[in-house]
Image (tube, rainbow, N blue to C red; front, side, top):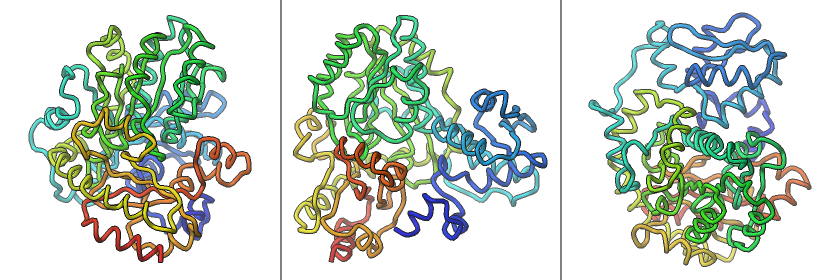
Length: 470
């Protein structure tokens, strides 16, 4: 936990040991090396996933920043005078939108420049990788026309493109308000807060089960709500609202329903028939080795706005680098088997935690508070996804430091991972009284732990938890 705090507080004693990390939060060392090769003296260069993203970043930083687009040798980016403030703004923008250059693309350029040895072998799809990824996604989106399944370079970019696409269709109708239902992943929240038209266009309904409160929000803004966004289940409380009721409410009021099933995967739940748009991270479960980031958007072909939404969203999607797509294609065929192994262990791990006297609360897909809602949309009985969150009656620090499980911020891997999620995602909130009040209002404790079960034997995971609990 000392290292977790040091990372969040940018303590050099911790950060100097951090050579890599989750790609949207820690710029990959190869991307850094490539940017340093091209950057002029006194400038910071951010290499981006496309020319459009580079231009957007320059506009985001503004004319006063001195930022300018960069284009050379097939690379694109934005350069600005060295400045911690500008650098922080640029990095956060690219994090929210999924705009960083792929590490594999950076690697390929470094090899071409003679700055790294030739790429080592990795399992990759030799044929049409995009077609294979689409085939792999067919069980998750069986009713989607090929044109209505769009690929993105990350789940974050899929969310951003979906938001921009819906906004483009709805704004001419006078609909600019967005509703966030429940506590969602931090970059989803950031997109809704930062990119809606004005401060009054972002609304938060904290209780995913309070449909009456949601109805009142719609009634208070007649004809003005563009869309409602939520996760099925939510991250990190793993709560499932009544999706059919949400769908009916949004249809009645002319709002688009945007659902994100990344926590359990679209292979576990069937929600597209109830939604206008489904966005998901393919980094989770489909890239179960943990070495690719990607995302997808599925548009409900039966909705009247399907064609307009698809066209509008496609304009904001960032391309998946070919080597990333080939690597994803090589893994995606394992998704069903990986999810089945994980789902076999999750109820056993959850039952252990629920029965332990030192554990205060446990949250997972089949938790009692939203079990009925979840089971209405589950594809097969027992499909849970891998996430379990829990809080303790005793010291987080003692437990976390004793725990002998892999520790990290992602999920949906073959490898079990655990992290003090609120520290990594919302350190600014847990370290202020106002922030802690905001979390408490949404039922979140600062010391909540997020465990993401992998394919290891359940006995081994439970034994590690039991040892740390003492």
